[in-house]
Amino acid sequence: MPAHTLFQEWRASNESNKYPFSDAASLTNDQGDFIADNTFIDAVLYPIGGGPRLRLSVIEVDFPFATFYIGDSVTERLASGTIDLWEAPDNVLLQDTLERTAGMLVSDATRLSVFQSWAIGTHTFTAEETEFVAMCCMPMPEAGVRGILLETGELLTNDVVLLGDSGIVLRKDTFSFAQPCEDSQTVDVIRVDIVGDPLSKRRNCEPMGQFVTPRFIRQLTFKFGANSFVCIPGEFGGIVVAAGNKDAEDSILRVRTLSDRIVIEAVGSSIRGS
Amino acid sequence: MAAPGFYDHNEGISYPFIDGSIGFREPTSPVLATDSIQRLPTSIIVDAGFMFAITHQAAADEVLGMYLEKVERTDSTEFTFTFRPTLDATVLPRKIVFCRDTSDPRYSTDWQDFVPMSGSDTEICGDASPGEGFCVFGEFEDLETMLPLVGDSLNGGDGEAEVEPSLVQNLNRTFIRSLAISNNDRTRSSAPEGCPAIVFPQPPSLIDWFQQCLSGHVRLEEGHNASISVNEAENSITIGAVAGGGAGEVCEEIPLHPVETPPSGSQLLSGGPTCNEVLRSINGIGQRFFNFEAGQGVVIEPNPLANKVVVKVELTELAICDS
Image (cartoon, rainbow over the protein chains, first blue to last red):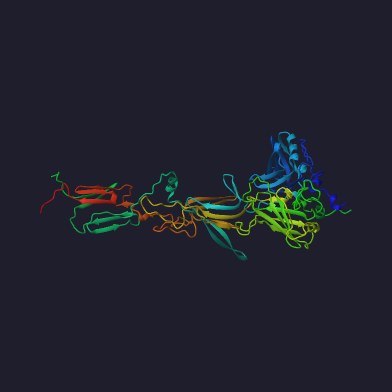
């Protein structure tokens, strides 16, 4: 008989032991809840920031759903996975509070259906009762920048794009700084310039068809006979119109500037007045 | 009697594959194709593990698994083993391929990165792979007998030779791999009705320019009118606007990308005239609708079709002295 046929398959070999729980785990709590040895076939746990003594900390039954929480020695609810007890899957996918995958409890639909018989409510377990073996637990320290969490609660991860919009411009630069006893280090810099949008009124009104591009006056041309004089705005966009006396010291032409208009007139006695 | 080692033990069982998914021998029920991956002898692969770092399109609640898609004899002494994710290829077009020679030491471990399914597909940021895996190989005698000729292969699909789920680690969405920056298009001017259109060197759409793959140590810098503050207690960075803050008030336009240029006839990147290129006041009076009023002796005639105002000093109703 070939020697290899003597060996049980992986899952079958764990049917009669407490794996993935520790050999010392009692698998029962002081409320009388009992988890059978063969309920879970396997487990892989990697919650970010997870500490020592990962365990199956809480099972919440709220028909038709059951939620499995894993915790460590500091945090009771590090990650969780919810299943529909009437349509149980084969595995319980675990996610942390930011919906990042934190591991999996391997089972099957038949084994998980046993939780249909559990009372509605919260069932808690200590590390002595449901601690997982170390082989199933992968340390995931919370080092580095794991993501950008917005005020809305949305988490940005993987390859993140920062987009400047509506008067904000992003540019890449570099920055070098000296380090003691080492070569200087150069890092990438993201420079944020807030310059505003000079055409904001167009941006806001054009989509609704309420913006009409104005026709600005770019210059004034003064013509008299064959003569023509083009006046463009000065540094501040202004033009001065005045009656001069270059050609006639006793010119009767006057240009009066009032608060809201210019009056062009000739001085002299009116016929009506005489 | 000494207990067998872990790898030795695994040569006789399906592990690292799910129980009973490989190692089928005749007669099989149901009947398997002669090249079915499920005929793979259990002695070939004794351990494996896979890690996904980035899966761009996979949903957060999708279970990610691996299966052995193909074993092929590619040379007289060489075999390749191709593993694929259980996700649809359109979602995660990646594979991992191990190449073994029959002369390689028994129980040696091979590490490989995931590679694109097609040669033209590339990852953002160069060579950054979306994941990696390892495989430990045992005895090849049974496989050499099963696949005697170069080109012979065993083939399977999703759900057949599937790796134990606990051997697959999904780290998607657990870290930031890189930052990229870009700028949305600015608001651009358009010509008034009846005037020639403004022609921009770059098409007026979302700017298709990115400064990609910023990684490692990244620094945020205050530019014009910007204020960046760090709150270590809350682990937060606040980017705000303060008039004159950071690098101070801006004196000139900031291009959205390195080669942005103004359109012909304009000094501004957004097109249109500058502030001192349009008439804003006459004699210090700035109004949208400017009034020229005719006083005594003067007649003002508008000619809007010609863009003209005619000022006539006709001395009407003025007493004139005859010399």
